[in-house]
Amino acid sequence: MMKRRRLAIALCFAFLVPLTFAKDKKDAAQPIILLWPDQNNPTLRVTFGRFTQLAAYNGQLSLESPVLIENMSGKRIPEASLTVYMMDKDGVRVGSGMLSTSDLEPGQQVRVAFQVFSVGIPASLKLVARNNLSGVPTSLRTVPLKVISVPPAANLKVDGRDVGITPITVPMGIGNHTLSFSKEGYAAGSTPVDIKADEAPGGSITFELGGLAEDNVELRDGSVLKGDVLSVSMTQVEVRVNGKDQTYDRNQVRKIILVQRESVPQASPAPSATTLAPK
Image 1 (tube, one colour):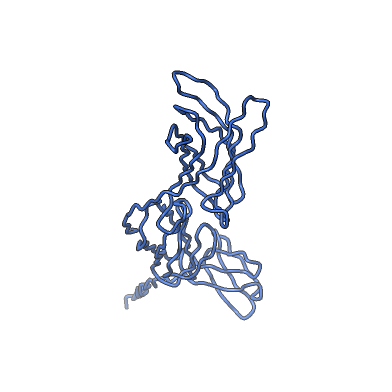
Image 2 (image 1 turned 30 degrees about the vertical axis):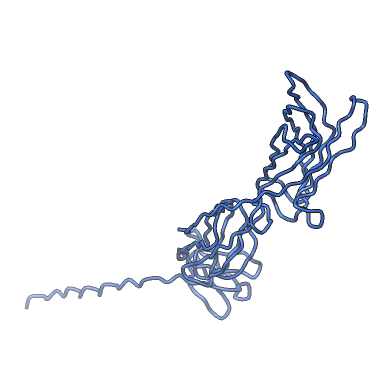
């Protein structure tokens, strides 16, 4: 079982940019481009198109803008949520709306329609996103996880990528992952792991590998035969697979892993009966 300690740490990182409106639909307003968290090492590029007024009622405006969100990092973003505040010329908030996206691969873009209500004429945008104490977006932070196998010294893969030999501490990104274990002489196995956004460091997980149920014969072409090794000589290897006996040239075989089997003592043969003929 993985031991978890949870600690929620959040800060607000904001951008404030001027907001301009087209006087009518024929005017071409310049797009508003925001790089988050900064211009030197951006994670997200958020581009707001022209804001248009959809409706107005009792001083409340309904506004809409096409928004393009681009993942500029080298990592997949499982989930991102941004809050957009509308500010008037005095810096007073007059409206707000949410921008959300999920499963954004590196370099991938997603286009969404951003709609917001405002109680006055907004003059600027303020973009706020949640990030941790180090300034890393919550969706991109990693949590160190200690991975232990029984027995130790197993090969570990995370989401199909080799990461090392157990026991090992692996930085895990937020989201769902698959840990795969393999060790010579043991059955390979895997387990899912879900890393939460508020996961605290110090967690660990232990996985027990099962024993092999059959002998394994690995050939030089990479294929593996699972069955019962019947005999090994200087020139041939005989193995029974699915009830069929197969013979291979010894040079075809790269490695043989034999399952430990318990010997079953054989009963001593009963003495044969002797019939004595009457004299």
